[in-house]
Length: 278
Image 1 (spheres, one colour):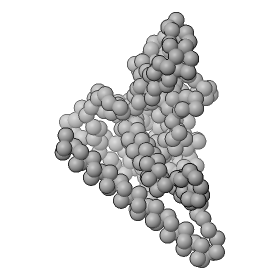
Image 2 (image 1 turned 120 degrees about the horizontal axis):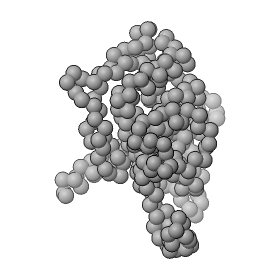
Image 3 (image 1 turned 180 degrees about the vertical axis):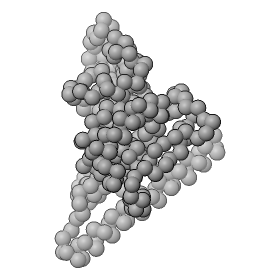
Image 4 (image 1 turned 45 degrees about the vertical axis):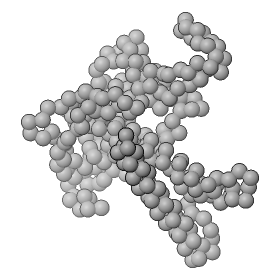
């Protein structure tokens, strides 16, 4: 246990140093801009909003300290990167398991982006098949199979069950996603089921939760994951190392990951080799 505590302290110190350097760089950049232009402030990204809240609260009764900022940055960084990397691995594994779907995605990327260009964020809305593959991967491999608990504000009857006031309720998304009464052939990877998906409030599909307590990083996660996958699949062809068999078993935890990490070999695919130097 002492060894684990030491490692955790080292990790936390590393994060603290990282946040200190990023915050200091942002403050210096803001100071330089004010000197040159006479105008204060920076573009209002997430960090700048937090720093503005800190500055505004310095003279108020309710202070928003640097510890608060670092805590929020820690939650955002750790929570966002873990699920994004996990889902990138699951999507790539499913595509390797279904090469015909990989080819469909490559064709879509060729049509939308072209082999003489790299993927940019403005391409994402046109990649409907990529979006369908990502959604189907979330359905079959929800990174958080048990959505964070809710607490009943009052007693109620739901589905024939009486849930007393104050009960902590966990929503089992994995069970819903594998229920044949909810999905056709739930154990099969069928990305086409989401191609004509126009219902934004489909309560069968809730990988990020719903309501006021749904994941605040929903839009960021969707864009990051789509951009990472589109870039990987458009820029490279992928194959398994010789003698390696693909398997899709998982290991349970707060985030459900592949039991055996996915290992692939990349082969450059774009016609202009200069694009790989950017």
